[in-house]
Length: 247
Image 1 (spheres, rainbow, N blue to C red):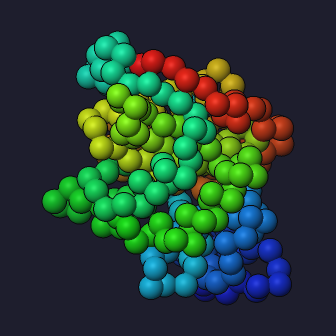
Image 2 (spheres, rainbow, N blue to C red; image 1 turned 120 degrees about the horizontal axis):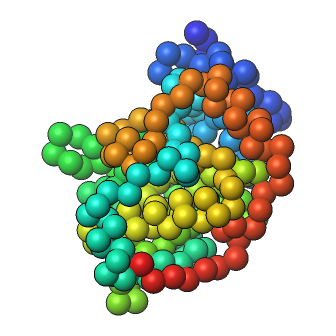
């Protein structure tokens, strides 16, 4: 399949079904708020390293986590019962995304953070370029991007960020510096998603870690159909208001 080059003077994307076998659809364009929102609304997301042009992807199959299918590992349930972490929403988006960009051992939300054999992210510190960080902070200020933070003794020890559009949440990345911190943030995200009747959490590509939490791959066509339905409903304020909880 051909890889399409985006025009700077147009926000139009090609049909995501025209992506290559590995999901690559287009190259170029920019990271403006309008273009990023247009991409996600069409089942497309940016992912590239600092030495590459902007690349746009729509993988097939697509890994999603349906909130009602979330699987809570017993070890995580024990941790949550101990009230180990304080969980907040939108208290420090910039610190969460910056921490996700730092080289470290990762807790995975998407295959963007895929591990190598030594357990280190192959993309840590590369795919989240300064331009990407700036763009998503702008999306946060505009009310589209959100974070869930896990704190311990006043220190940020884990978190997740992503975009909320309609009844869909597009998970981007998560990090931890303390065992189970990012998992606790994910569990809280899912809990709020269940309460708000969010249709799905997009995890983009499949990893073993995601499958353990109940995520599963669906076809691109199925994902696009579900996305169309989710976007037809106004975004509820389920993560726009800061929250705080002990877990």
